[in-house]
Length: 408
Ligand code: AMP
Image 1 (tube, rainbow, N blue to C red):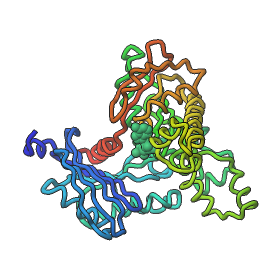
Image 2 (tube, helix red, strand yellow; image 1 turned 90 degrees about the horizontal axis):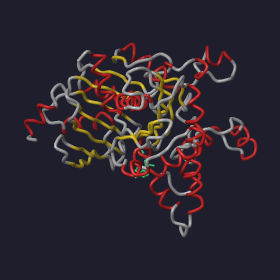
Image 3 (cartoon, rainbow, N blue to C red; image 1 turned 60 degrees about the horizontal axis):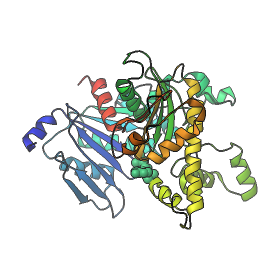
Image 4 (cartoon, rainbow, N blue to C red; image 1 turned 45 degrees about the vertical axis):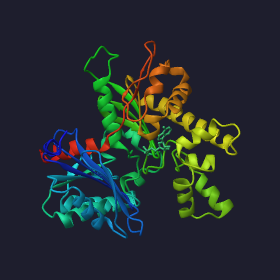
């Protein structure tokens, strides 16, 4: 395809911005959604700040931007886009509380509401807001939309989202379960409903358990396009064992560690968020590829710990999926996504193996080839439920929601 064709395909492009505390993931997606420019600005605020950029033709480049902050990095990103100017910007915002049940346009009013919600996501929302402020300072008149990780889960019933703690903590302080990774669960469940054939292509209600397994991990029960329950809660720490996050622990752990080891709350918070999960159990890494290698090499010095980390990760995921099936009036199948869910046939097979009572049957050959962005099913004909791998595309979903809010 020529460059001219590429710029045609990038008509009316929307810029998608996903700001972390020291990074910006971005994508420019055209009206036909099949072509995009994308990249990652990382190590912001350090001498090692840089942009890894991929052009519409797939050419990769790296640009050094020493000590750049979010605004300077976004300015450099926009320079990389050349003469292609976005018609709107869609931002990922992690926490929308119970204020935002859907994507919303950035205004002074909605921005103030998101600032108020920062206490619920102190690590994430301020970074997301920094991205909005950076875009506003560069393009004061460009329409911007916020797409919330939590919004998809606002359909969860109260029986699923309340904690069994005193009511006033919910009514006065918004302490409840929210769920995260919403754009990913929404994207893959929607896609699975389109691809599913087990019900004779019927177009009616479908029930999915969606497993987003990456560095962060969560599972969701989706029925008829609505989130019914999800494993993450008030914060993205609840639920599954993750790369560095513990997932569920006994709520009595905090008090016990404080009393016996004199650990304070911030130490415990850091331990549970940054030093636990695959990293904590394997003792060496949060990377599932490395864990699998160590687990299959009996002579490796960390073999036993890595094997346990792998088994625990899969057991806990299977156990959570089984419990979330209670939220579905009927079930069509399970969808795997995220870096681990999309690439590891081993993890997928182990999780299915954990769910022994569900009558799931794997087509081994199909499971093996579903790697590196391949989409497809891997259940055999006699499986009671479908099994799918669907590569997630959060940027696409954010783009679609941005266009819908702005009527583009
Ligand atoms: P994400 O956060 O979605 O980018 O996922 C990151 C996780 O995916 C890391 O734990 C990676 O080790 C894991 N991952 C990526 N490719 C593979 C693979 N081929 N096999 C196992 N895990 C993988």
